[in-house]
Image 1 (cartoon, rainbow, N blue to C red):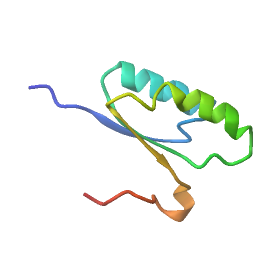
Image 2: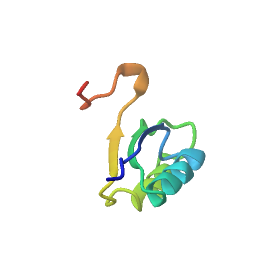
Image 3: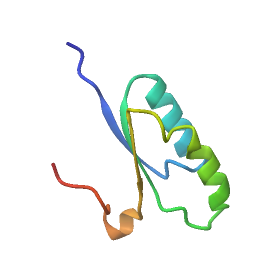
Amino acid sequence: MARVRSALVTGGAEFIGSHLVDRLLADGWAVTSVENFDPFYSPAVKRENVAAHLRHPALRFVESDVCNGLVGCSAS
């Protein structure tokens, strides 16, 4: 039985992060993507970048700032 690999991607809705999430999901990874939607560049663009991922069954999307801890995440 194949073991599912998992990854945590911070900035998963930004340009590089969203492309990394695309690739990981396509390659069969389970992905947790964290994004705080800061205004460094348009949060609307970031939301467009992540929109296609949100329905993927292997994606867990967390809207949070890692500097403040991962809201909604448990240690298990």
